[in-house]
Length: 313
Image 1 (spheres, one colour):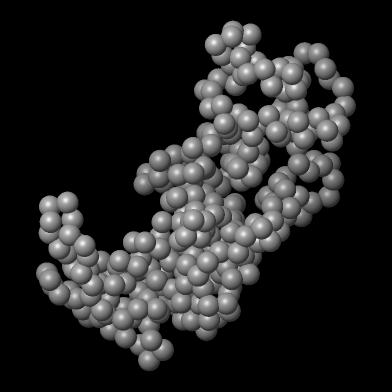
Image 2: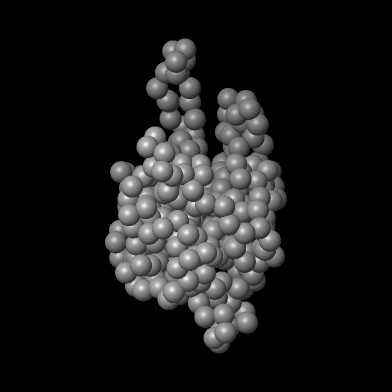
């Protein structure tokens, strides 16, 4: 290939700009963007740089000096400068409203990495697990306020599920400010909710009945609910839908609300905490949906390139 000369700041900016445009064009084959076919070509790519030069920059793309010093415990050292730069704008550009959600995403990746995860419930099924904290309501729903990439090191003072929530809330600086957090049953526990309550943060989520501190005598029947409340105002409620649904909340009572008629004109009743949870957990799902509509990431076997081209979209 030609063009193996040193790059410049301006050329790198042009390269990143072309990466953004790839998401807007949505062509399956990257080479089609430099095609000379009038029906396929996109003149801005050829006018900015040659295809060979673009491929050279892609193959040589690094974000840290491989020969420099780096922490042996930091498995993200290849991307650490980028992550540190992104963390600050995420907090300064936008402040989420009251309702936020924490959940995990799976960024599809077919290369090799010690932290690869398999999750049959996700569309990608195999890839890199990412914990995300997103806004849940308003026009900014789906905006990512903080994220952490799982690298197989979740040990700490708290259990892994609790640590994931605490790290994100601390990173986004949302604790002690009156936020309301929504989580699913992998994160929810009385221990976590008591901790958040002490940090002036209410929480709502589905919960596993075998969690430590959960009441052992919950038994909901069809058309009825069963609930318990703690002295601090934590509600544990079980509602029998198609199967038992167990909820934990520090922001709700056992109130049951009537929903608008469905398409068949049938009115239904649900516990208010269930309705609130269904609305509040949309943040991360919407974030993943928006990400799919902007496919700037192309195939790569380098995990740090995959993460870089995904996290700044």
